[in-house]
Image (cartoon, rainbow, N blue to C red):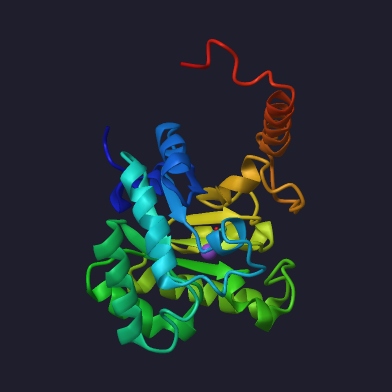
Length: 265
Ligand code: KIV
Ligand code: NA
């Protein structure tokens, strides 16, 4: 199989072929997602919520992100693997940002890193890029800043925030990022940004005009049952399927139905 590269992702934008992306955090899931033909796998810091059960993405550590990334990389044959730099590992100090990015690249074998924010972290992004590490940006709703926003509602509905987002997007393009996530912003702003930058935009809750789409795998599969924002389309009800399976197993164990003769040695 031919591996997806930043070059191929860039060409997709120019051809008008939409880019498909999903998160994964472990070997078994990443294997399925990769073999099913996804273009980009993000080892998201949403692992903090989905895997570790934290309320926010803030507590997950660089070591934990590397553990997830290692498992995903072992599974992937085709997709381009991007890893989130976690909160506290890149803001404010470009040398620390570079060290974090290098640890991820060296210890996991992933292909790129993702960081949240615009002009505030320009120095960090520039320094990571200077080491030859591809960087993906992330603008709009940036969950590592949740305590600044106060809520997970739609961002950049007002003119001033929309204008800053557009400038941040152009900056990410100019300094050499290979793409950016746009999270939970109006569809019209996504369209404007996507037309005014040369690199691909990957939307989540950002409408149909992004150059690609991303979702959290456990949301798409219907494993996370309570989380139902308007932007989420569920492609399966694994919560129901898994609950039935476990209940049937419990029943069969209790009733001495499992294991039967054929299942014994
Ligand atoms: O961590 C994550 O899952 C993400 C995506 C939602 C873009 O950053
Ligand atoms: Na993230």
